[in-house]
Length: 587
Image 1 (cartoon, rainbow, N blue to C red):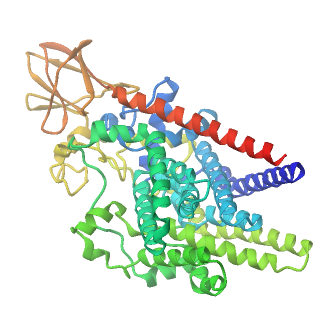
Image 2 (image 1 turned 135 degrees about the horizontal axis):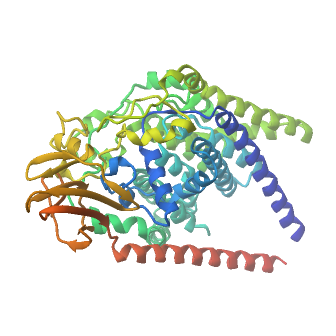
Image 3 (image 1 turned 90 degrees about the horizontal axis):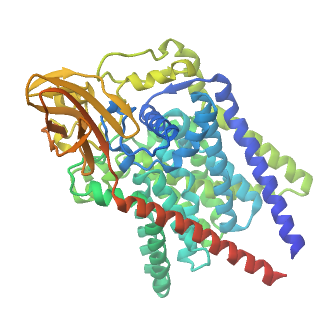
């Protein structure tokens, strides 16, 4: 028994080293080029990172944006989870900005491979298949698209933990021992991206209901297992959930959600993009997924039921990414309100990637296991890994072309207020900080008070569409109706304006007001009102007015942090003791 245990440890160590090597191969080219093509959500997430980095260096945790997001005090860090960005923050302390990003990207590929490997091992106990699945799932074009093409970092992080979530769901439904993996997986997804957490929750509910209808006798055990996980998630993610309860609900804050589905496309176009295996488009699922969709039925026809179910769910999600599903009919309906959080059906590509790569790993493992001898298997396995690495770089061909052809788009400094950062801007270490001179391309006004919008259905920051928002981003202090552009002084969770008046007048400061916003005037705490643009308004004194705005988190938030930490520690101790007991029994 002991020899077998050490053999498994040795195999796992070798597998981890293999994943390290592959991750390095997948990242080294980007590190050497030292260039980022910034587009889509990139400016939003780099601004998040920079705020966390600045606050971390001063020994603080970010709650509101003071250094970035035009120093408006927007509560992005309250309502958009940031905890899993701290490894990137630490790398940012060690490396130059661009290098830190790509090292972090490579690290996350490695983590994704390890989690996918472990999850597949729990699912099928086939190491070869588990290794292949780890690589296949990590280099899935949509995942790469999220990571380095459009840098949709929240969703990119959430993708990492999907295998843990679904193998946990499988264990819950089949009443196996590791029921807690569902709660751990879902908590980590919630730490990454709230929308992804919502979508996976819907998936779990639907799959569980269908399973219980098919197997009524299992309903009681499934409900018990799911209830345990609900409690576990509440404990592990309490510090994520509490700000929504204390500061978001009924607070008139605009969320980025919608009940209208956008960026719809036909299956024909999705198929055409996918067979090119490009990661340049968010609608491409890659050639491996299309191949699996076409031939997977043949390979799973004699397999266990769980393999057929995985393949069927993968096909279902693939069809759902296209206009085969009449998404447009759901706009402004009850269904739209429930599913509208998706915003873009192409987000379902995450689930396409997971389920179809489960099937594709089965196909490749069957081919490998059919080899006559060990040497043939090793050569075939090595060839597959090399081919997968080559296919990864092939999917990124357009990105490398952009890096070379867009060198004229080097992002320059900006002094123009409320100017949006240009798309496809070239970022190097030398001009990295120029990102924060601009307004963000997408997401600048997420989590703004609704009253700040003149047109609530349009998030444009132009003076024509949303003049109040434009004035906030332009740092316009309004003194009894008169506007004056003033540059604030900032620190972690702290924004200060120095305003001079000739008499006692109302002063509207361009800093957003939330439930727990605190204001000081000349060093003294004062009450304030909320202006018509959702910002802090005070009664100023004659002469010099130093107005400082901070945010004071709820005590419940700190209690939630303690609960989460204690739960993680307790969970690890319990699992360690349980594993130790198993080892002792086997001896």
